Image (tube, rainbow, N blue to C red):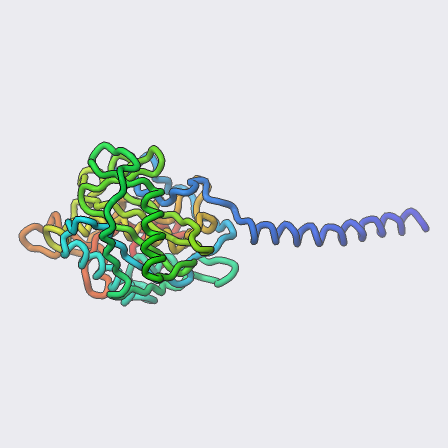
Amino acid sequence: MTRTRRFILLISCGLVAAVPAAAQARAKTETNPAVNPAGHIRGVVHAHKDANRFRNGTNNLSYHGGPVMHTNQVYAVYWDPSGTIDPAYESTINGYFGDVAADSQKATNVYFSDTQYYDGATGNILYSSAFDGTHAVVDTTPYPANGCRDSYTSTCLSDGQIRSELASVISSRGLPTGGGVAYFVFTPKGVGSCAGSSCAFSYYCAYHSNFASGGSQVLYANMPYANTVPAACGTGQSPNGSGGAGDADSTLNVTSHEHNEAVTDPLGTAWFDRSGYENGDKCAWTFGTALGSTSTTSPSTTKYNQLIDGHAYYLQREWSNAHSGCVLTGT
């Protein structure tokens, strides 16, 4: 064999060996996607005092190999042993989820911005949300002994206690779990929570995460009553009125944040930037231009920037890779 033929043969063998190695690398990326560095507690809506320090709007989101929520079915769980949640608070939140579902596929609100993101299994996200009266659950189970201590409340639930109670609600009622279902756990005014050493109102206003239960993933968000401490978690706007309905407006702002992030990064393995920030994180507490006000007597505190199924809401913007910035509608 000549030197030239031996050289060609060696290169050919090297190329053949390289093909399986490349295939194995791709398989590893698909089956073991990168995990969001934020860890278990993701999409934290930071209290106002820390918002600017944590918000990062300088780079686009990257895909890290994990699943997204192609479609989503929402359940609202009100953990309210004493029945202190104002019915108007609950009905406003339920109405919001119903409106988001009714406007599925429309490009006229912030949820449509999610449709530019995708995964390898199901393709692009569809703006397709489901919610009806059967998806609202009132849980009157008494709170356990305090699992934490925060600066603002006498009742404090740990993340573990919230997860345990949600798992119990799901099991006892035969509710669905898995990658297409998202649970939002709402607690009354004056009830706090902590995830490790980070607590409601002093550090966060809401977050989303997931845990395994019964062999399936449970996607959930912890949703404290935002106007327990308006200076920390309020928007200053109440287009839906006063009392419980007006308080719901501030909670709905952080609900939208967590809902959009659950869709685009349900397990912490899909869409986030190099710092671990998700699409809501990068635009937290930025609202863009208001469309109007729902009151002529107090226009400065009843602004709205979204009309969803014809109803007014004041919600933060979401990050769009297509625009390399925050948006309120479309992509």
